[in-house]
Length: 160
Image (cartoon, rainbow, N blue to C red; front, side, top):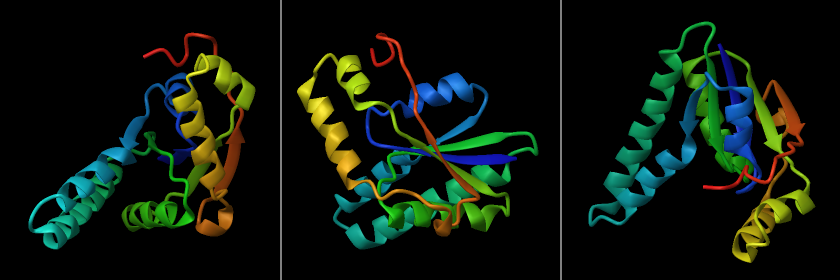
């Protein structure tokens, strides 16, 4: 089994990179887990629901990994800008397997991002803001390797 965190700011090309390089991988979108926990916080029984949501999301992640076969590739996709967030999900993965975990940091050319987003200033600012908040991942966090990917996309790449 191969486990890879693919991280980077919004609009850095994570999803496109995954489609092009890992078309058969099992994708775990961390944002889905985060949305479940955030939704629990809006309920009257906030604290208990949030704890339960976080527990069940962590269990879902671990069960996904435990159900994988030896030749499967599991991709965890999210911005994961902060080391603390990465360490939480990395610890959950390590509870499920002793498979080394790789990290790929998406680092596209900023001018290309501006061109791809057709100068949509809101999206460009979001990308730049998140990039400014990024704490660079390192092997000291527990990754077996950390690699920077410098993707090049065509004009249609970011069309939705």
